[in-house]
Length: 93
Image (tube, rainbow, N blue to C red):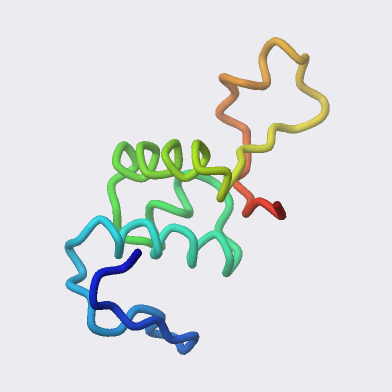
Protein backbone atom coordinates (compact mmCIF):
# COMPACT_ATOMS: atom_id res chain seq x y z
CA UNK A 1 0.00 0.00 0.00
CA UNK A 2 1.36 3.40 -0.89
CA UNK A 3 0.84 5.51 2.18
CA UNK A 4 -0.71 8.77 1.12
CA UNK A 5 0.43 8.49 -2.50
CA UNK A 6 -1.72 8.99 -5.56
CA UNK A 7 -0.88 7.19 -8.79
CA UNK A 8 -1.33 8.69 -12.22
CA UNK A 9 -0.61 7.18 -15.64
CA UNK A 10 0.95 10.36 -16.99
CA UNK A 11 4.69 10.70 -17.64
CA UNK A 12 5.10 11.47 -13.95
CA UNK A 13 3.46 8.30 -12.75
CA UNK A 14 4.00 8.96 -9.05
CA UNK A 15 2.54 12.18 -7.70
CA UNK A 16 2.80 13.19 -4.08
CA UNK A 17 5.49 10.66 -3.09
CA UNK A 18 8.91 11.59 -1.84
CA UNK A 19 11.31 10.39 -4.53
CA UNK A 20 13.79 8.92 -2.05
CA UNK A 21 11.35 6.39 -0.65
CA UNK A 22 11.57 2.70 -1.44
CA UNK A 23 8.07 2.84 -2.93
CA UNK A 24 9.24 5.27 -5.58
CA UNK A 25 12.22 3.07 -6.43
CA UNK A 26 10.08 -0.05 -6.86
CA UNK A 27 7.54 1.83 -8.98
CA UNK A 28 10.31 3.43 -10.99
CA UNK A 29 11.77 0.02 -11.83
CA UNK A 30 8.37 -1.39 -12.79
CA UNK A 31 7.66 1.65 -14.96
CA UNK A 32 11.09 1.40 -16.58
CA UNK A 33 10.59 -2.26 -17.50
CA UNK A 34 7.10 -1.47 -18.78
CA UNK A 35 8.46 1.22 -21.08
CA UNK A 36 11.04 -1.02 -22.73
CA UNK A 37 14.22 -1.28 -20.64
CA UNK A 38 15.00 -4.95 -20.05
CA UNK A 39 18.69 -5.36 -19.16
CA UNK A 40 20.04 -4.54 -15.73
CA UNK A 41 22.10 -1.67 -17.12
CA UNK A 42 19.14 -0.15 -18.97
CA UNK A 43 16.88 -0.48 -15.93
CA UNK A 44 19.45 1.04 -13.58
CA UNK A 45 20.19 3.95 -15.91
CA UNK A 46 16.56 4.77 -16.69
CA UNK A 47 15.43 4.54 -13.07
CA UNK A 48 18.41 6.49 -11.74
CA UNK A 49 19.70 3.76 -9.44
CA UNK A 50 23.16 2.19 -9.17
CA UNK A 51 23.31 -1.30 -10.72
CA UNK A 52 23.82 -2.98 -7.33
CA UNK A 53 20.71 -1.33 -5.88
CA UNK A 54 18.66 -2.05 -8.99
CA UNK A 55 19.68 -5.70 -8.76
CA UNK A 56 18.49 -5.86 -5.14
CA UNK A 57 15.14 -4.27 -5.98
CA UNK A 58 14.68 -6.55 -9.00
CA UNK A 59 15.32 -9.59 -6.80
CA UNK A 60 12.64 -8.48 -4.37
CA UNK A 61 10.19 -7.77 -7.19
CA UNK A 62 10.95 -11.24 -8.59
CA UNK A 63 10.20 -12.77 -5.16
CA UNK A 64 6.80 -11.05 -5.31
CA UNK A 65 6.25 -12.47 -8.85
CA UNK A 66 5.95 -8.99 -10.36
CA UNK A 67 8.96 -9.39 -12.65
CA UNK A 68 10.91 -12.37 -13.92
CA UNK A 69 14.37 -12.83 -15.40
CA UNK A 70 14.49 -14.57 -18.76
CA UNK A 71 17.66 -16.07 -20.18
CA UNK A 72 18.32 -16.88 -23.84
CA UNK A 73 17.05 -20.30 -24.91
CA UNK A 74 20.48 -21.13 -26.33
CA UNK A 75 22.06 -21.30 -22.87
CA UNK A 76 22.35 -24.69 -21.17
CA UNK A 77 19.78 -25.17 -18.40
CA UNK A 78 22.39 -25.23 -15.62
CA UNK A 79 23.77 -21.82 -16.68
CA UNK A 80 20.48 -19.96 -17.07
CA UNK A 81 20.04 -18.98 -13.42
CA UNK A 82 23.37 -17.22 -13.06
CA UNK A 83 23.62 -15.85 -16.59
CA UNK A 84 24.27 -12.14 -17.11
CA UNK A 85 22.66 -12.30 -20.55
CA UNK A 86 19.12 -12.35 -19.15
CA UNK A 87 16.38 -9.81 -19.68
CA UNK A 88 13.82 -8.70 -17.11
CA UNK A 89 10.13 -8.87 -18.01
CA UNK A 90 6.91 -8.03 -16.21
CA UNK A 91 5.00 -11.12 -15.09
CA UNK A 92 1.62 -11.84 -16.63
CA UNK A 93 0.19 -13.60 -13.62
